[in-house]
Length: 297
Ligand SMILES: NC(=O)CC[C@H](N)C(=O)O
Image 1 (tube, rainbow, N blue to C red):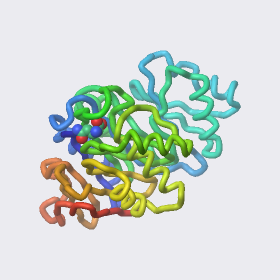
Image 2: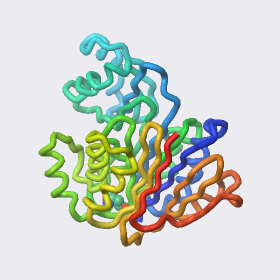
Image 3: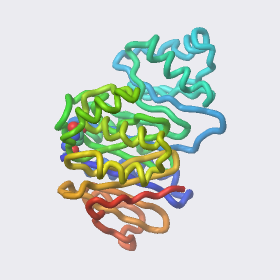
Image 4: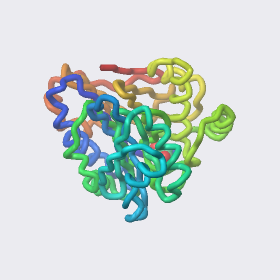
């Protein structure tokens, strides 16, 4: 199982409703993935600013953190707290330095993702509770991807929840399981890619990041998964201004898409899409096996 939802808005007027629409979609997919849940929301980037989403199980971990970053890393950071997560806003040219500083100096803090637009929240727990805990319904933005997890390949932990973010403003969610992730992980590690978990999906996310770093666009990177990843997969991927979908050639995991002039939506099942505006007039289809779909703004 596992449930995937995704919504990419073409009409900016719908942006204030993004979180409430995606929260409704995620709720329909609870029983497909009751172990844990997560979502990535792409908001409007602020010029010259980078965002780093961090998480800690220790309620005190974020106390005084912005002051420490200023004092020890020499970077001014704003911290906005949301339950077990926080978003640090820093000058975008200092974002990598702050991530490096966090990794070296704050062992009880995990980095969920970073970029100019992305915020990423994920936790163990029932998906409706996870969505409520992080106020998904109140968030706005241009696109969002959510996931409800029933684990197959690694432990049920915060870091094992989806989405996986392995590069700036990138994220990936997955329904399925990969059979060659261990060998591909070794290959990517040799190329300097770092992994946080033993999860198969993290390897797929890192593969996309690796291909895009080599200069491929999102569509071509997704096409690469069809040659280089073995196993079952529906992947939904977000980038700063893009949204992509690919299914493996056997396509045994369910998927449905809908498109109107206002949005493109993905659901593991049609019921995830039923409350979207004007869904009765949407073009609704099942994505083809071994076919890449992607949209960019
Ligand atoms: N049920 C699934 O689709 C699981 C996805 C992935 N293999 C994981 O364990 O996270």
